[in-house]
Image 1 (cartoon, rainbow, N blue to C red):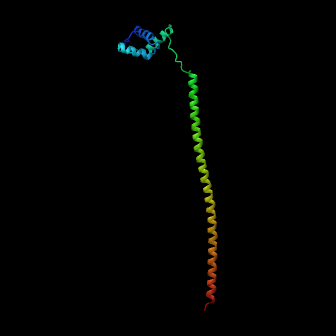
Image 2: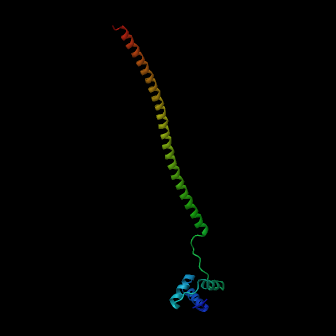
Image 3: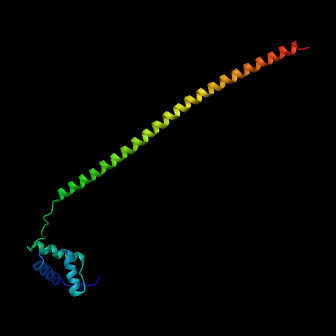
Amino acid sequence: MRPPLLGDEAIRAAIRELEAGEGRVTGVAIRRLLADRYGSRGGVARVYRLLHEAQRRGAAPLPRAPARGPADETREAAVARADLAEERERVHQARWARETDELRGRLARAELAAREAEAARQRIADLGRALASAQARIESLERALAERAP
């Protein structure tokens, strides 16, 4: 392992300089300042360790953003997810209602077609019996006519 290019004192000086200038000190800002000044950003773990030590010693703590708390953001995110889920459910229900209605219509048409097909089969059977009866009658009349003819 090679020795660090920057000493702890250089990092602490950068922290003090940022505290005096901006008030808000982040590890990214420290590493950017070190890179600009020394050409080396320092180790991430070491920079953050020294930053936390400086904050614990009474240096200006990181100011909290006056934005909403995490509970509000979490609640809003949950509400947004619930709204999205409700919209998806509404679209889903509408789709299945349409498909169910379509299938019910197809079933009704299929049942009607089945009844009509059965009626047609019955009619064909009736006509077949009538045809057979008519042919039998024609044969008997032809025979009777043949017997009478000289």
